[in-house]
Length: 504
Image 1 (spheres, rainbow, N blue to C red):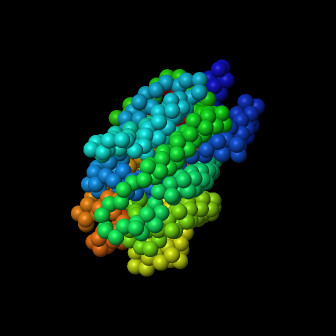
Image 2 (spheres, rainbow, N blue to C red):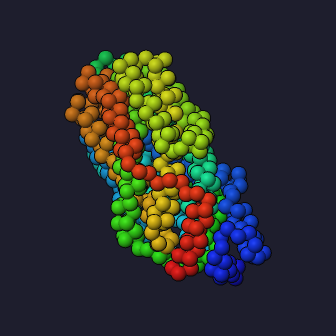
Image 3 (spheres, rainbow, N blue to C red):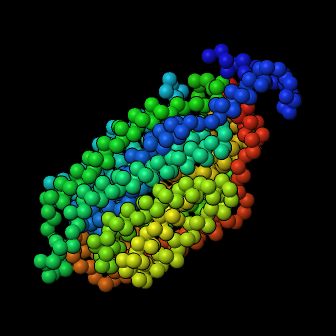
């Protein structure tokens, strides 16, 4: 308790930062800061494990929720559009709310962010399970799934915002933060791979192509009770990962703000901080560019399974294609981290463009060999599209704090506002695209869709992601970008944070 004030008191009388002889206290403090800046392998892995449940759940909903609502719950496409749009908007609206309350929360024995993660865990698990539950009534199913999806997205936001903002409080070293982010992305993708594998294998029996062989008419097919039961089992398995992984996160990761941070509130109000951060040019450019890129990735994921089911003869390859995308993303994440460290973050952004010609090829030639190649390349591009913004956000926070003299709490504002805007773009993209299926004549639960539906799915899987990715990359490459702070700048920033926390 007495150590932090002593450190803060020793710093001002030493105006020669480059002199190695200011006394034993300074040398000892430097060694302690260096050791404190390093993160152990166990800490990085446990930090990554903490984000696994949300990634498993979001992967399952991205690949299978739309298909479940259309073919198992047999909700009209217009209602599915409202469910997806409403859920995404709910999650987006919860981001600034989460940032506001988390920013005003006091530090406890387990930290300022960790209690939010642990407190949301049981409620998210329940909301996720009921999202895949088939209620006995049919007339209000659209309202049921709208409520469950909105609740799940909002709770997932209150889980994800403090979890991602925790990156800034693990260590003051930018390189270690980038390394922790890479570990997090790799572990999350590995968990997503296992979760998608289990979920896909469990529900694969609900979408066997032979269920339509005895039906000559293009109308809806009666849903087997076994299909709904399979989705409930898969939901229960995924929901169980929330308490398990949150416990490992709490045991393996200790929230470590600067030593002199008291248990008082932040030095800058949330609304004032939000106004300042959204006017920060490098951050604004990052947000706008990834509005398009993240929306493109969500559209590609959401319509891959529907495209394989209704617009091509790839029914038997759905699970294999989903696994190919995820395996490729997992394996390529360490490679992209190496590229990011050695060639810069803007250079690695070109990896997102790699998927553009291949998704167009898939729409034109929907054959199995082409589909697997496209799935592999898409996984490579999705990996860098997920890794890059979370590696750039800490640099944005540091760049902002080097230019301004504000206190703690900014990391929550930056992270929550970024997630808010990306979720809002995803809501608009998925809502409008699903509505286009309704206009093209999509029939829920039908074995064979009209030719207009097939053409619409080809456009959604090829042209739409291509345009969004090109627009996002053009915005990202134009203008200045926040640089990764040097060690000297990082040390000055750490000292400034200590002073800000002390005065808060």
